[in-house]
Amino acid sequence: MQSPCLKEVEQSITTFTQTYPKYSDTKQVDRIRGQEYYHLSLSNRICLDYIGIGLFSHLQLQTHQNPVSPSSSDLHNDFPFFSTIYKSVNLRSHLLHGGEGSEFESSIRKRIMEFMNVSSDEYCMVFTCNKSSAFKIVSEGYPFATSRKLLTVYDYKSEAVDTMVSASEKRGAKIMSAEFKWPRLRIHSAKLRKMVERKRKKKKTRGLFVFPLESKTTGASYSYQWMSMAQENGWHVLLDACALGPKDMDSFGLSLIRPDFLICSFYKVFGENPTGFACLFVKKSIVSIMEDSTCVGIANLVPENSSLFQIDEGKSPEPSKQIVISGEKNVEYRGLDHVDSLGLMLISTRTRCLINWLINALTKLEHPNTETKTPLVQIYGPKVRFDRGPALAFNVYDWKGEKVEPALVQKLSDRNNISLSLGFLHHIWFGDKYAEEKVRVMAGGSVKKSKGVQEIAVVTAAITFLANFEDVYRLWAFVARFLDADYVEKERWRYTALNQKTIEV
Image 1 (cartoon, rainbow, N blue to C red):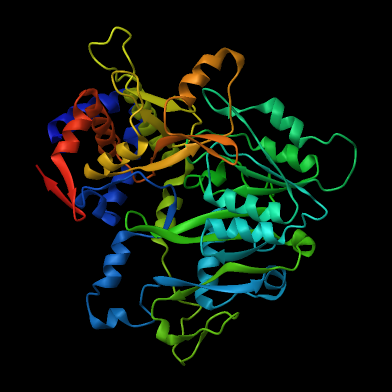
Image 2 (tube, helix red, strand yellow):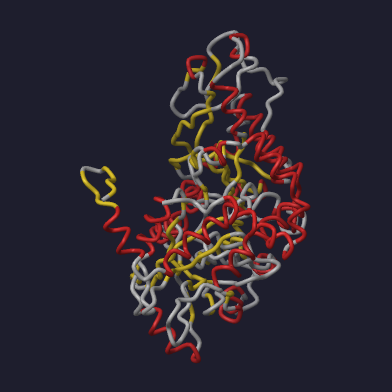
């Protein structure tokens, strides 16, 4: 299958920049992409399957793997790509007495805390192997015996949250969840307020309030005032910052809301491999209330030249030779540096222009030759808005109004060199006026039940700050292929799976 021709893209981008003139102010991103992440264009693969921030740039990776001269691979100049080594430790003791770890880890910790605008005077920070581990570690150490409730605010199924819920339930926590109003999936404020506010004027801590400022599936944004309300009503607050775009923390500042826990995640290089690690911040003032628990999932970050390090179980890696990574070494985190140089306004302007164009373009697609003008795409959550996030959840429908299986849409997108994800929406509340639509939605296939909760399967796309117009245009052009009533059937004939090989018929 061919990508859209250059002429089509050029004509469309002319119309796009006329409609969204502010996009032209973000050309600095295109320069960074061309210089430091040129693989995104050379590979012809569009990465729309995860949101996150990389520490380093692709150019750094290439320079590291292909040094200009032997001297450039010397340890003091070597680029610090690293591995993660997991260990089992007591979280409370580790927070109180664990120290800073190796100089290598200290360098990364210092840069991340600076990037997140988090003070080391107020927070402890540990590395974890992934987001799910960070959530599980909190649930295993949180004092649910005295603060019994766990209240989460997610409009989608999250493996990390499910891990926390499961571990918390085993420790006697009462689980509660926010609900989201159909069709825009805004928080059902009346219900959430009722759960958050105290019924009696008791000063007892109520439990743990887990809150993302943004849905990484639908792009819905939530007010940070929910965290203020939770704190005023005796809740400890865990802020999930994993779905936030670069520099979004600056939009409210931790100086206004100081959550008790903060979780964020990073990967190494965008477009290479989304695996990385997560960071768990714990407010120093609450470390003393954490219960003693042995946690699996805390990680050490070790330079890839691991022969220079000895790892003892339960201990931080220590250098075993006289040649060590100097604390004075000037490590560049060019992934983070690029984001810092661009700033919140420029990045949000760029992603807002791209996601709004994409939503407008998708909603205009209608099946031809149908009396009712059946829409090709249903978008879940907010439509075009100034403050929506750069994530999109949608499904494709055929000319008869029947849903195309999201897994099939994802498979076909992959054949078009477009990486998309699958997600599940849940905790959806249908008002009385949407009773008939609820029946249609829930009867439309790709609906399953998880612990009694109905979940709707959706296709998801994430627009990162490095995305450009051609990326979103190619996604739109791919989806538009479903306007051909025979498209799916043609693809089934075109590709026949045989011994894991794709054969064109």
